[in-house]
Length: 308
Image 1 (tube, rainbow, N blue to C red):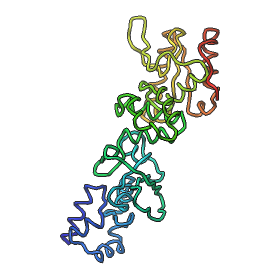
Image 2 (tube, helix red, strand yellow; image 1 turned 45 degrees about the vertical axis):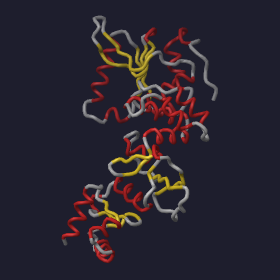
Image 3 (cartoon, rainbow, N blue to C red; image 1 turned 120 degrees about the vertical axis):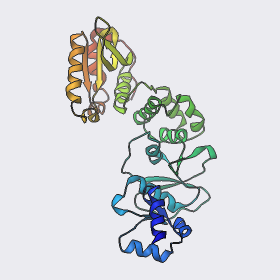
Image 4 (cartoon, helix red, strand yellow; image 1 turned 180 degrees about the vertical axis):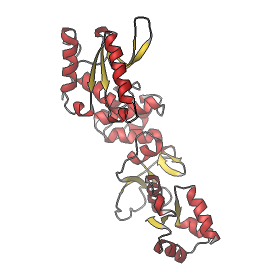
């Protein structure tokens, strides 16, 4: 009983997970562990890893268990590492695991994507005891593997949150790798003033259509200098604002009403406000066409349209 309690205390510090090796260290025999799983007290999550409180299963518990099953030298990577570092929201997709290139991979497992990778010492860190590729290595891997809008949005977010100081810091991590040429272009387009992936998408659509915004998060003021709000994208010379309307912006009670009041205040101050959703950005020409129409003759020759 005491060893079982000790196992519970240890698991509580590890998202409810305990490994087979830790069980042996505590004096719990394989037979006893099997009994605990059979009677429902514990749950086997992955090879050599168990959940001590099955009713409290979490995404992080599964990630920890999967990694434990691969043994020393393994580390989560790509989107899974991004989750742990807070670079992206948690997803329900597969757990991505990097396995030392010299080690034979195990058979395929449900919910797991494994890759043989040679990682340097500086490429791996720990997040609450979970081995993961470092922030810079994670960002580089994702930028190299994603399409342009997603890649630039990821870098924008990292810059905005302070996880990345400068896009150039990723250059050593992408140099010489497949996709490096395109990745360098993505890094050159990054802007940490964008506050959401949707803002990045709207900005890039505008740039591609020849009407790039003159400013991001632009302070809109009254005649007396009072700030009414900040426009996501702005063309101050034309007193035009474009807002990126993500669904998450209106989940907080009262947020929609506050946003509408802010728009009314901007309109009364002489600004025009356009609003774009994620769906709007799926049509490459739609966003810049609306902005160009709002700019009128002044916006007809603002820039060259990006091919493709």
